[in-house]
Amino acid sequence: MNTAPARLLATLPLGTRVVVRYRIDDAVHGATDALGEIVARQTDTCTVRTRSAGDVVIALADVTAAKTVPPPPAPRRG
Image 1 (cartoon, helix red, strand yellow):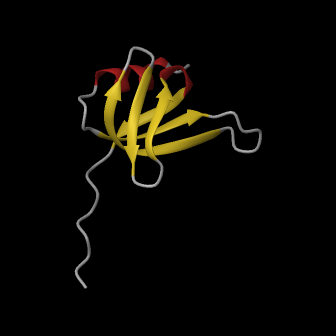
Image 2 (cartoon, one colour):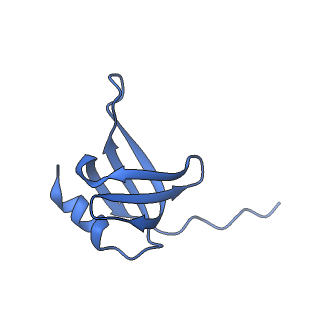
Image 3 (cartoon, helix red, strand yellow):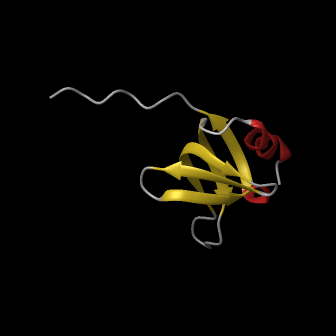
């Protein structure tokens, strides 16, 4: 585990928008990303609410990278 990203996720306030790269059990891909807001946190997990997948529970031990990101752009006017 890379402890710096896990430490970051453990200290950010709920509601912070982040992108998190974490390991998955998939022989082809091995890792995936979650982009969204931190909505819950336990001692060993973090939950990120994404647009496409809903709430994603991520084990902090599986996190390989994480950073805060700016809010999504405003919707385009038609």
